[in-house]
Image 1 (cartoon, rainbow, N blue to C red):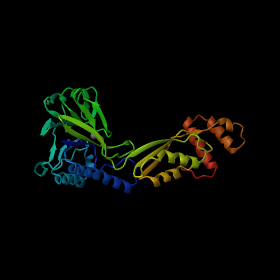
Image 2 (image 1 turned 60 degrees about the vertical axis):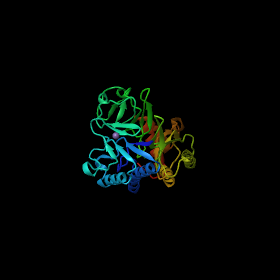
Image 3 (image 1 turned 90 degrees about the vertical axis):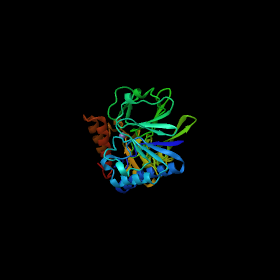
Image 4 (image 1 turned 135 degrees about the horizontal axis):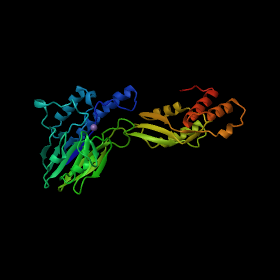
Length: 353
Ligand SMILES: [Mn+2]
């Protein structure tokens, strides 16, 4: 038997990448399509159930239309069961309570609910009390929970006291809430996994995203993370120390992103130091990246290389300017910014303050 564990889809999420509006609409569409494709893949691949460990929706931002779309997806795939545990962003969405709920949609309440699903028992609770969880030792047990795991402490809202779930006959703890894949041994018997989200939404969600495929064979649950995202987000550091011209800097950036697919979202952070005299056109570098990737952003974290001794005797406007700024009480970083700005102004460049 095969199962899929996913979580944190945050459908209709506002998206935190500062994407331009057409891209935002497109990415929102892609988040929903990712779920639709996962359902298709599950059905075609003979997956018996999809376990959703919370935050399928994104609070009040998720529209009724999207909720209806999800409901239709579930209804139209009667071969796949959906075990849906609501997370902290799912409030207000009940996926058709009462009479119109599809038969293949199974949910969890505040108390523990356990479903006997062939080779496994699937349990979960939206307000879990670990002390009230009792699972038979002679069955394979999967438990769904949503929240931040902590080693010690008591159960609080959105907090899973990891230690309290040890030695309770759990074979696989399907977690949601953290947006990156993570796994850890629970005890001698079980393993705990965060599936992460299906698609990254912002540059705080870089790296591969996907779901966990569970295969139940010979009384064991095997698990494997499967990358699934249509687009990945990357944050790439690019050390520009030693670049003596705009062209060299562009080459350096180009090398840093060479291996990345064009369909991805990329944030390049320039690091290292660059000479104060080097006149750069960073908007041009950002445009170059934007032409190449689905979305790109450039951030400048370089330090300006200023050697005050180069200017200590120079009888020029530049020399006087550097000496004054260096002698001021300003913090070092401010001094660098002012000198960089001043150099641009002195060379007749337009200032982008
Ligand atoms: Mn959450």
